[in-house]
Image (cartoon, rainbow, N blue to C red; front, top):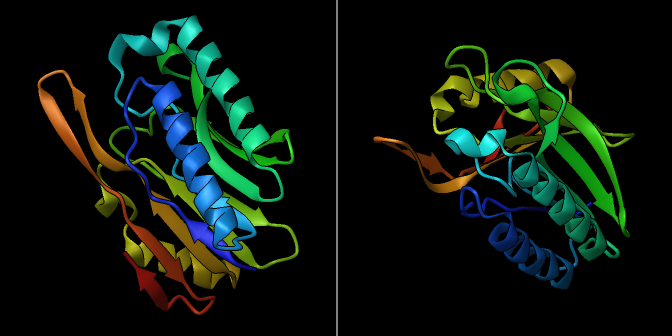
Amino acid sequence: MKIALISMEIIPGRPDLNAAAMAERIREAKDAHAELALFPALSLSGLFLGSVWKQPSFVRDCTAYAEEIAAAADGITVIFGNVAAGGEGCCGLSRTLLHARDGVLREVARRPLHGAGTRFSPLLYELPGEHVILAADASPFPLCFEARTLAKTAQEQRAVLLYVNALGLQDKGKTVYTFAGSAQAFRADGARALIT
């Protein structure tokens, strides 16, 4: 199976621009004959949005743009992160990992919007029958879920693990965070096979 690991710049609070960029990357993945494209967590919304999270219209917009991504996933499977209503903690929202193909959209993983304390962790999804774990992240703190942890997960699950993180800058008031935008692949024995 050919999988495109797409670590793209995510513009916080602009699901319209992020969806357009994702649609272009999906076209590129299809042109490269990929069967699956993996995007970071919160690909449509971004992470640090302050009071924007409390606006129901923003969450509805993100949901509508997710449907556009499902429509763009014609002949290719697309796994991407989004925000969803119904969660614990801040604003009652969750991070969700969505599976899109041929206009059909379904949720495959869900976690609280913000990690417990300062701990961030990717959304994980094991491809049925493939021994492949997909890990989508949106973390400015990649050391919290570093290579050793990813390698250990691959080894314990005896599966190939493919990881993507968001790319770009996002701010939280006075503090600006950098998202490294890495893509990594680990073999089932835990050895790292790729890092970008």
